[in-house]
Amino acid sequence: MRLVVHKEIPADPALRRQWDGLVQQMEEPAVFFTYEWALAVSRAYSSSLAPLLLLAYEKDCLVGVAALAADASKQETVFLAGTTADYCDFICDPARRGDFLGLVLARLRELNIKKLRLANLPGDSATASAIKDPTHNQGYWVFSRSAYLCARVTFQAPEDRSAILESAQRRTRRYAQDMRKKGAVKFRHCTSWPEISAQLPSFAKAHVARFLATGRISNLARPERRRFLEELAHALSVPGWVTLSQTVVDEKVIAWNYGFQFGGSWFYYLPTFDTNFHKFSPGLWLLSEIVEEACAMPQLDVVDLGLGAEGYKERLATGTRETLHVTAALSVFSSWKEKLRHGLATAVCSAPWLENRVRGAVGNLDAVRKQIRSNSFWGFTKIVGNACKTILRSESASEFWEWSASEFAAARPADSHTLAPLDLDLLAAAAMQYSDDRETLGYLLRACRRLGRDEFQGFALINGNRMPLHFCWVAGCETVDPPEFQCEKLPPDSGMIADCWTPHSIRGRGYYSEAITGVAQQLQRDGKRAWLSIEPQNRPALGGAEKAGFARRFSLLRRRVLFTRTTIESRTSALDRAAIEASAAA
Image 1 (cartoon, rainbow, N blue to C red):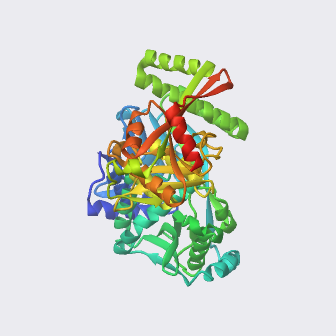
Image 2 (cartoon, rainbow, N blue to C red):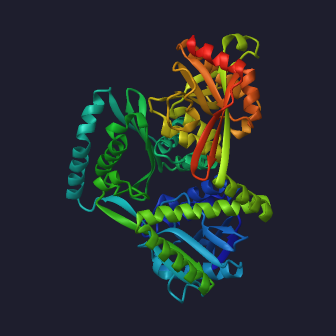
Image 3 (cartoon, helix red, strand yellow):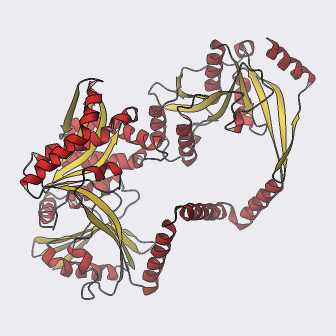
């Protein structure tokens, strides 16, 4: 065999035909092995991935493909599709897999690749045994561990199809009856590029919203991940391998699955649903419909439910397929280090309370490393010293400002943006727009936890495209959580505006003052007085409050010695005290 190395995925129709032909010779052909998948990954992640493609030929016939990505600085390589595919493998006829693998590893040694991290390798693949064979592993020390168990629905006989069909219908019968009370229900499958491209934006936003509702950030918040799905759908729609399935109620899509039909399998790859319909289990219902349709398609033998051990998959699954995480290193020390790390992680994960503490400690260590890298050692030492002082003794001050229509009349008029009630859809749009802003993503997760609580009302300042520019919250002064909403000195008809946030990339454009003005006017229409709590050192917020028509009334100083809060001292001037008393009496 002759090996050819490429640093990119060539746009070559002949290579595509031969590559996809080899995929059909695999133990279980999967769409994740195809030329189209590798090309979509390389295009979408071109800024972060460096492809390393090794092609084996006999004369002019392609006999092996290793689609990898190299990290020259770490002298490591991984599967190119490792972070996007449910299964990854070396593509070659199983009978020749060992020889091809030996050839690839020998070339990687020549390229000074000292470690391979191979994720999601099927446990039943010929590669799993060949890479451990000393005649093929080229001196690499191999450590293999179990990674995932992928649930599957398999049709091995005609009677299996009948039993699986009956089970799927029984599990969703109640949900179907309840949902049909909402309107006409139908299922549809988009397979052409024009159909799919029109549905991808709403699918991506629903996926991000669903993750936010569960306290997580979806990878679809990242633009490169969305571009990958677009590139993939565009490429796979030509041979008809991609299927975007949907559940539709009265023309409203409530559930999606971005999946594939390839090589005798229907891959349930990327599902999501509208959280407003969660009580109807729309995800399970759509999966059941896919299983029902697959039962009637003789060319399909498997519905592969992919990575992730969600409970609803287990209700329908008839079996599993194991994937492995394989590390191959030239250094025996590095190999044993991987084994030790895995052993410790397994032991820690066996006790949930210990796992939470270890994760917290690891997170703190990462934060320390980042502080040292960004501030130098002496800068970090100063930060630690200040933190120790804060533990022993601290004090915090808050200024309380009240809004009045007369003072707003002299302020700058509001811009032409809209104030909208905050909901999951707006938070999802913000997560996709500000995906590189970690602090904003943290704020959005905090905001999701507050949605639906009666004591809070959230607002977003949005532009003409319904893109959030600023966020803020309102609560009564008696609210006890979080502390920025608390103030026992305010009159009972007060509404406290707090926890305001503008994403870093658009600060300094007046969105804060515009938003709090709109909220203050809304509170006035509701018969309430609008108040702001601002830290004195936050100069931009003080200036924005004054611009919006707020006036300072009083301030509070809170002191804490050791772990005891000792005093809350009011610093109210006579003039300001008269104003607040008049406000309370009005």
